[in-house]
Image (cartoon, rainbow, N blue to C red; front, side, top):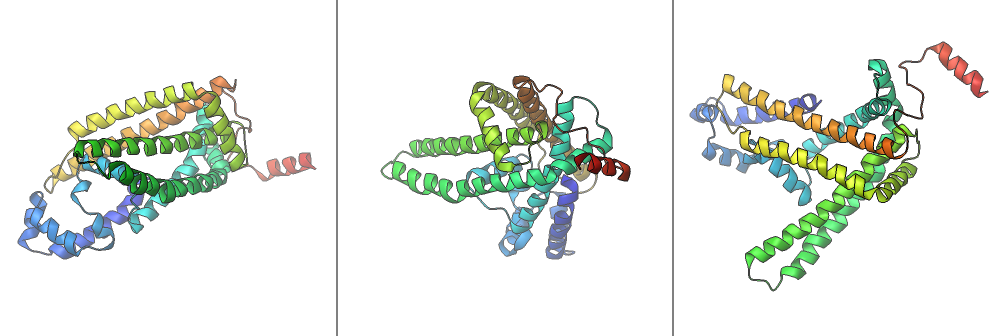
Length: 312
């Protein structure tokens, strides 16, 4: 899914770079490695998607730039924002089938997986609207208050740069903790929607909040355990992340290596979902339980007729 969404953007950016380079000597130098003079020239005249082609696209800098953009509340480029929206919608569709599979702890086969994905997709979309409003409020009101008001008041009369830096780190930590809390509530809201077959997004969000509040110690312990593992993956990536390379086989080798990191990140995401589902079920005696019947894709016309007759 990541490749499918980013491939059109990559082709557009490739066209912009190809148009700017043409058949010049700069093109040969850029193909052999990083040509900083040309890169600065390209960045100075770039527009739209071309403005994203910065040194932060190389290796581990991409990860750092993503974290920095979230903590600083930077809005993504419009084209990337659309790709991100489609990515989130794709995950909203797949998440229902993933959680349902983990909750049942047995194979649901392809048709069962996609049936569950379809059942919970619109419920997750409604939940996404609720969570999106919360994130909008945090980035539009809370973030400016922390970094434009509180930070300025705290550091107005300070002359030691280290103290100013520590205050900023402290505010980053506070804001990051709030984002983490919203993320936790969202995760357990999704789990309650699937395991308990809830239809109300607001009801599921409130129920997810109750579960987090009543089992806060267990929830945080599991979250931090998963986070430590993820940080270890990031540390390894920081050490081995490839930089700029030349054209030809080396370029494709770097691409494959980078995709391996994407796969590991996906496995970590699945680990988060699986462990949180197991924690929720173990505390509410829902082990190997899901309220909804095993989904079948697609139901036959006869099955639908029987279901209607039973309801009548």
